[in-house]
Length: 512
Image (tube, rainbow, N blue to C red; front, top):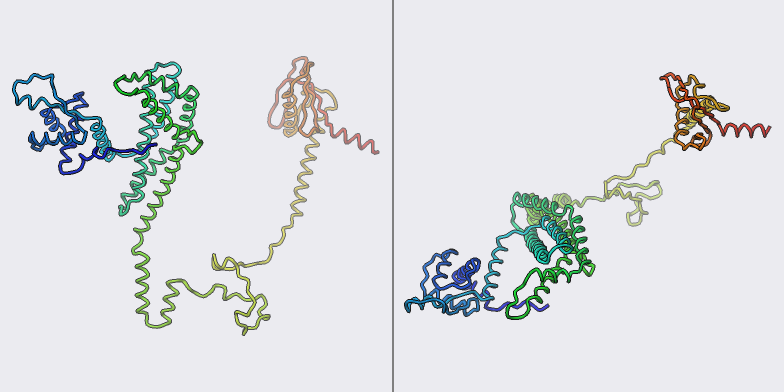
């Protein structure tokens, strides 16, 4: 990429004693261009100057000299107006010359206006811009499938404008954020308010940013499947560029569109697989939140301190000069720097008789020092090991309870063992616990699929009990009574078999 080269005289009108007049003249031409007036006479220039705010007295010679200077800088062009009818020579002198902005003059004035707009504007991170980019990409996909070339051009132009707004606002907001972090001498209350608002603003922007990024990436891939070059060619046909003298405007127009699309890819879906700029923006936002909190802590800490460390040491040095004797100096030193005696000097050997009291410290064997002395200032204290709990009685109680539950369960199965097919109504009256087990068996059988003859089979999970259930042939109803109520239902023909009990009994008879 070639470096940007600005003509040296392009912005020379912004400096010097008459810079205000030069800028006002270009502003007057800019306002005229807004109203489709491309050429102005000297009287028209004077009228336009009053409209843009130039109220100082200005002679014709001074205005003509300013226009000549702008012409010398290639910012203003002058032509003779041969289409007018002039009645006098003086009228010819005033109305013959027509002034207009050159291409360089239009660019210079646009640059100044853009600079002033940037100085007056505030950067922003707007989730609405991301939503607008996503929506325009969706609209572009729709127009590529069933829309006209003009609609493709208009939607693509809107997409590029939203992308440019995202880039410009992000750069400006990042600059303002960095200046906020570098601000010195800021009032604590003001900075706290700005910090709180900025942190809330960043958190609002970072919310659901991944979801928006995914939606944009999906639609970018859809457009690339259609063909980016094909899309740009349709947009060029819809733009209807004029064929003026000079090179073909389609070539730079397409090149500009390709550069804009590459910028969109760099933000959301880089071709080289690098980190997307939207992800970098996410990281910058999170780091900015942490940095703002740290700056606030530093400002708060600096406000809290009444003096600096240098002032503290100087004050301590003055105290040392006025302390009367050596013992007081040592006490002041120990108080200021905490240089007290070692904490482990009071530790003793497990058997003090092994080491004589006259033995010097360098020659004495080492003493074990607890790591807790450095962190908490105390040593471990070992006590007697707690007695092991006797759980024999607890185990016996649990075994007794388990045996009782097994006996109760076995008694219930023995009571429900029909020894053959019986009617449900034959049970008559049952204990409620036995009735609940019978009801569970009935539920297991009814939950199984019936065979071709209508018989259903079910059983317990451990396989000890099996139930065979047949529907009543006569439609009779059974009635079972329990201490808690009466049960009514079909009088099924059922057979309950305790399989494990029978197997154990057979084994016992075989052993005998």
